[in-house]
Amino acid sequence: MRRARLLRSTPFRLALSFGLFFIVALLVAGAIAYGLMERELARAIDRSVGDTYSVVASTYSSNDLEDLIAAVDTYSALKNAEDQVFLLLNERGEKLAGNIRTSQIKPGLSTMPAADLGLGGNDPIRVMAGNVGGNSLFVGQSYRETDAIEHIVFASFLWASGLIVAMVIVGGALLAGRATKRLESIERTMIEVSGGNLACRIPVRGNGDDIDVVSTHMNHALGRLSSLVESMRQVSADIAHDLKTPLNRLRMTIELALQRQGQSETVESLLLDAREECDRIDATFGALLRISQIEAGAGKARFKSLDLREIMASVAEIYEHVAEDNAQTLELKLQASVPSIINGDRELLTQLFVNLIENAITHCPAGTRISMTLTVTDQAYLACVSDNGPGIPAEERELVFRRLYRLDKSRTTPGSGLGLSLVKATADLHSAPITLKDGRPGLQVCLSFPRI
Image (cartoon, rainbow, N blue to C red; front, side, top):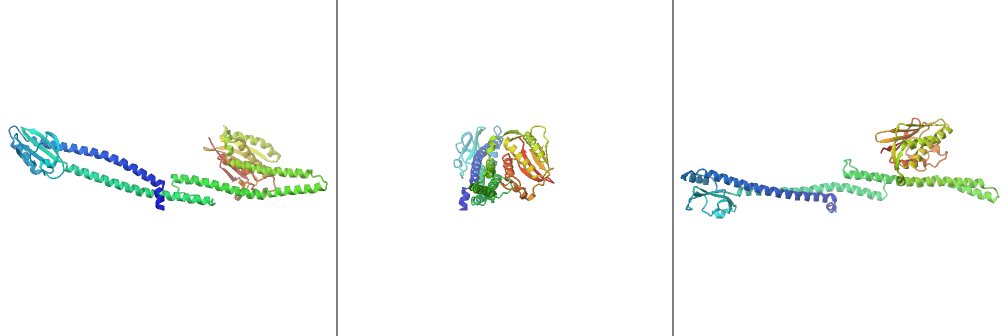
């Protein structure tokens, strides 16, 4: 089963495809190289035969045939007839010297079968024929050495091709095996996730290859999915828990109104209380719906270039007097003297800073100093809202972003526990990481908006 899966795997097929392409390229290149080598060897034989013919012919002088005969006999005695052939015929066609029998050979260079020259073997002979002082001189050389060289090269090429094919198959199997194991780990992870184990993650080797990149993005997606599912579970539990009290109050108010109505007492105040309680419940569900829409990316359609500096200044201007009425101070410190341009939704960003300022004003005592700062880095605009109030315990700083979550000390103050949840959703929509830091004393909320 595993072998069949390996053969069907994409890495193995890619390795075979590239191997086949390489082998075809090797065959084409080898055929060209073999043809060039064969041509050069043929030229080398022609040069060798021509040089030998010239040396032998140079021994002849006018009316002195003895030196030529002696030269032909000497070369014939030194050379094997199957490798080099020599023949000297007089004007009447009688053999004067040589190691082959008389034959009809055309003048110039020609290729003769060994049998036509009275030799054994199947190797053809390259022969040069010419006239020297009225005598016919024949000098030839066998193709045996060149054929042997060509055979060796051809055999080497076949062995190399076979070795390459084997290496391609083995290498492809090894690479495919490694890739298949990693793909199997991805498959197992997705099976675990589909089975409900949202904490399962794909192993990452850290070598930065394409599978690692895909695995990292998938892990981020799984983390996002896990957080959304956990958020939905938490929201369901928090709605059931936190909205139970106002619904009970609403029910008690209605029952009390019914009792008073039966006793002919006025119920106007109770109806007003019930309406106010309904408004608070409606506002809570409205905020939950708005957060869900933001998390779904609905606000991105309204993104445009905005001046972050201008938005913070307008919020600070509005809430400066609100802070003064609460015996607090609100300061605005903008490092940037030029527009700080980002892509975003003005309404959502305004609500974000409004929520942060209102949280500080609501949960900090009189005399608290609240500050809004904007600093510029090479990659981002860092917007912070700080105060020197009681702050948030370190163990609860991540929990406050949960929907309907409220600190124990803030349960007596008005609110639904959705302000920071909306802040977090808006920050994520704008790709602005948000961090809560200890202001020593107080709390510092910082958002890093990417520059454009």
